[in-house]
Image 1 (tube, rainbow over the protein chains, first blue to last red):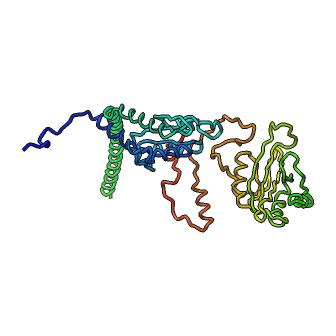
Image 2: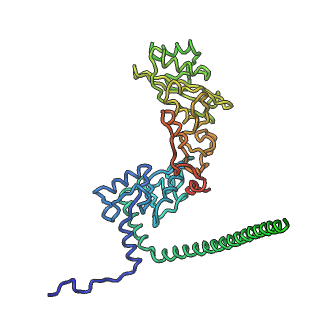
Image 3: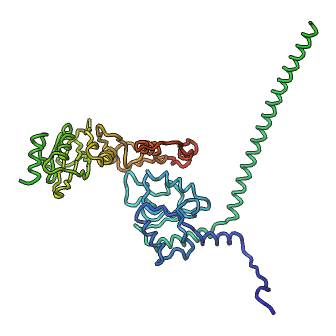
Length: 212
Length: 200
């Protein structure tokens, strides 16, 4: 009796393809909602539009667990350092979507308090127009981002990262050797000094005893 | 005699109030030196007591058509709870050299933040205010943006987010709490804290 399991059960692929396939179908967003665009994002999460069909159903409210920073709303100068800090707290790989006119360009807030586009602070991958954009535009941006993720090469990035690490290690080891040599030199000098002083003291005492 | 006419006569007698020709109804001009006693009279002794302070508004008349007189004004809007249709507006005119008004935050607690906002946007000082800091703009902001001579497109970046722990601790201690120890993470460390900062 033959079953399917007895047939060859493997397939070949490139690692890049596999990693990107996993990444692009589990893009977990971090909603940085400050205005009405965040309401549109909520509706794209609902069953009518259903963001989970592209694997983005988990909205994470911590930057440590999310992949996509979704800036939905107006960013003021008072808030800019907070946004930048949250972006820096996200683990790589990370992507940024600027949702709506305000986040992309400041919108109609041409005034003393609004940042004219978040690309002044952090790098942005996708801009969405609209005030606020409909959920369809948001989906369009997510598909665009999926294409972008599919184009990235995990192996290349890994090689670059490894090269950087190796260079850092080499520099560190050089510094370590130099400091060790310094230390050895200093301690040997100190040691010889102490030994010399002890010997001279001993000689002195001996000569004193001899004299008496 | 309507409510407003009655109160206006009283204010005229006691505090030398004048009618405000340029404004809408129920508006009274008053001098800055008599503002505090006038507000306290309106709140506690007037025939219709003004229990609610609705708003404090700053005005900059620079470049205003057909305007004569001092540049700045502060307008206080009051409302009564016992007869909700009765409202009154007090207007204080202030010169550009010394824009100063006495605070009324001891009479109305809400005036604390409203005065802070007027100070932030117009640079009008409220004498005797317990904590006159900026309310809407950030700590590194220079100038007062709603003044007519502020350049609208002047952008002012904030390098680090406002450090509010000392304010928070003062508020807690005021309420009877004691600060036993601080977590190291919340203290501003020059190296670590500023890594998230925004450079020009």
